[in-house]
Amino acid sequence: MNPHRLAWATSIQYAEIVAAATLLAVIFTKESRKIPWTRETIVLTVFIIWMLITTFFAQIPDAAWFKWGKVWKVMLFIYITLMFINDPKRLQILVWVIVVSLGFYGFKGGIFTLQTGGSYLVLGPDGSFISTRGEIGTALNMTIPLMRYLQLSTPNRWIKHAMTISIGLTIFAVVGTSSRGAFLGLIAVLFFLFMKSRGKILLAIVIAASSFAAFNFMPAEWKERMHSIETYEEDASAMGRLDAWEFAINVANRNPLVGGGFEMTAGRRAAHSIYFQILGEHGYVGLGLFLALGAFTWMSASWVKRKTKRHEEMRWAGDMAAMLQVSIVAFGVGGAFISLAYFDLIYHFVAMVVILKVLTLNYLANPEKVKAVGQARQEPGNGGRMKYGNVDIGP
Image (tube, rainbow, N blue to C red; front, side):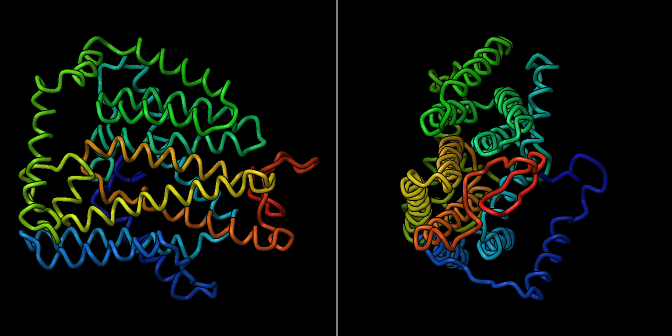
């Protein structure tokens, strides 16, 4: 969320302070620190090791090692997530943290777009993963499915209404970025959201109303920019992307195993695509690992959805798995046009699918013994609080 970027003292490294406190807690906690080793976590580990190897052969060593110093810290916290988000209650809290953190920008950005008539751009906080319009647009697209999950899982009608409003405003915010990549990602998200979600009629109404209103609300300049998708040969920005992709391919062809290493262009040009970014920086091996990680995560989410379909008490897991798949689609489509390959959110989604898979396996092994699972429901006399099995997770 980077809230400090919106106020004062923006140069203070709050993330490092929080990270240090978290690592101390990890060291001194008495909780189990087991990492679930699945095909996803194995591929992720190999991918991280491969990125380290390619850094030794980087074309611009200083820039590459500096970037590696950032990337390994991001990946470290994915393993911490895997270690300690180990029950439905904590997993649900993680979803709420993501939705509130990024949903803030969707809510605010949607209102801003409405206030300004779409004449100004929706941007993210400076100095963050999501600072540019394409990056914030893709991040918001990745968040919409989790809003839908909370809408499906909560028994609290006020939260349901809040999520409905948030989805609508976030659609406006994505449109307000004027990012063509984010717009294509939004189309993909809304399509898959409809295909993979329960309660399609209400969802279709919300999607249709928000999309129609947003499209007709935006100024002519926005419509002209979106229309340029069809005539990309005439657009300098689009042709620049094609040139950057060709450059990444050429680097990979010269160094097919290790690529050019992190920051192979040292600021001269961006890759403008997660796929070509990985290809150029880590070679064909790195790209293969990156794609394998995505494919395995998708398949595991499908497995969770399939295995929980006939278990009412595990319906929440199937819903979350389906919505995480839609979030992966958002990253895959929107990321095709921006350099966001190391965005921590997508790797947290990988971890969340792994956790869902482990929880589902535990449940199927002994349904009676696993208590902290079940569909979110409202019980009489509990003040509208949500519970998973016998686990109270709050309003």
